[in-house]
Length: 159
Image 1 (tube, rainbow, N blue to C red):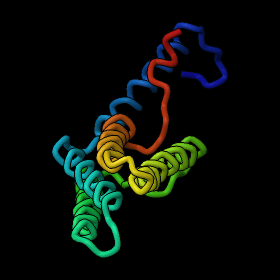
Image 2: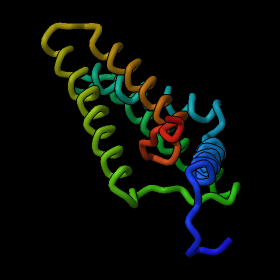
Image 3: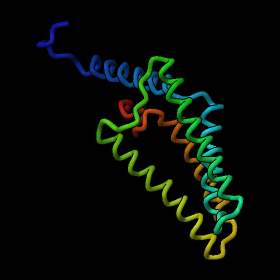
Image 4: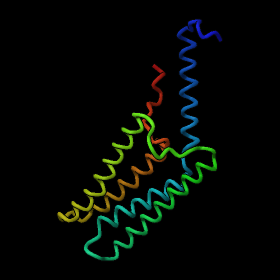
């Protein structure tokens, strides 16, 4: 196709649909296996729960270290499995959407970690339980629906 020749609206829409389809296929290929996403999410939830329950030097600190170790192990396994599939793990955001995604998710996770412990110390005993469940669910959601660490509008070209 000649680059100087204008294309009609129908061809442009078809090209946009092809690009969107290839982006969605890449997103699906980047997804971790469900078992690994669940394992990472539950280990992060254990970390948040144990942090919320610690007081001075009790056994919840051990749960926190175990949760941290399991979470870091699952992260290393995720990076290794993506390498085996020929994909490079994107640990540092490369564009504005990725930076915004990392910033918003960091604030959300930080608020859950700090808020769960703070509310427990204020007398709300279920706060670490809720913070851990929300953290695990949010971690799974991000790993499943945004494996590239970016926000994408799905179906934006269908108008």
